[in-house]
Length: 364
Image (cartoon, rainbow, N blue to C red; front, side, top):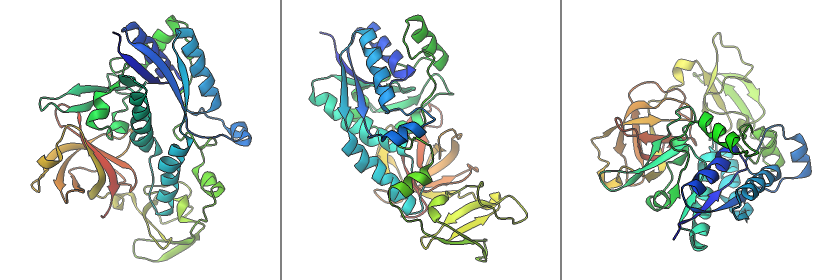
């Protein structure tokens, strides 16, 4: 009997091609578009970038499903998305952190509620158009490996997948490059073949998170802009306007390029030179373990490659067991701005699979 797969279809070329490949491989495929955000008419009018969950994307996903003759569903997840993604996004900015909603969406929605719903409906697997690979290690644990296309690799976003998630998930694009995916889509007349990439933050159509926070009723916390000696350089209109490592929009002259070094709870912002931006020792909280078993993390430390933001290169590091729930990280070379609220992902030094990952914190 054919294995049943529920494919998350965003309406883009990646999930469209994934649907075609799964059918070719003999799976009984159904498509599902997750409705995550209720767009208002004025938001759609102002939207200049594509969003992965907009009404137009749902229409394109339905077109592909009809073309491939597979069942298609709309799964309403607005409440779950608001609670776990949007509210988390707002709280992080209120607390001086810089959230990563795409990571949280994978953790809680795509490989949380979506996979649970699929299994409850009798599907054997879920699938997505992510560029990543799942393999079983010698210790019998499953882990995410980077995709063949290093320029499109999305493994960083997938550290939050549990062992059961990994067991029940298929990534059909693991061994394909983006160019190959587009060629397959074009060859088989998929209407999404030449479609552009979607924007990162799907619930902010104009790509301006500050405007979004204000629309949500957040009162920005005013404060002072300080130098590293605590001297007041200027006033600002809200700490929510800033992120660690930010350079643009400061409008402050200190003789050298200035960067945001710290966002204080009282609303003040400390700025300084780039050299003072690095923080080689910090912590990871809310950790998820893949290739590494948490019990194997010791006080002596394990050598890993640590990636502190998407599109940055992983750097050699040591990780230590700080508490049962907290990992301490010591970067062995400069990786740039360590930003609270962002994700840190730990890779095996030689085989490059994900060991674990969590949320960056400067304390715990």
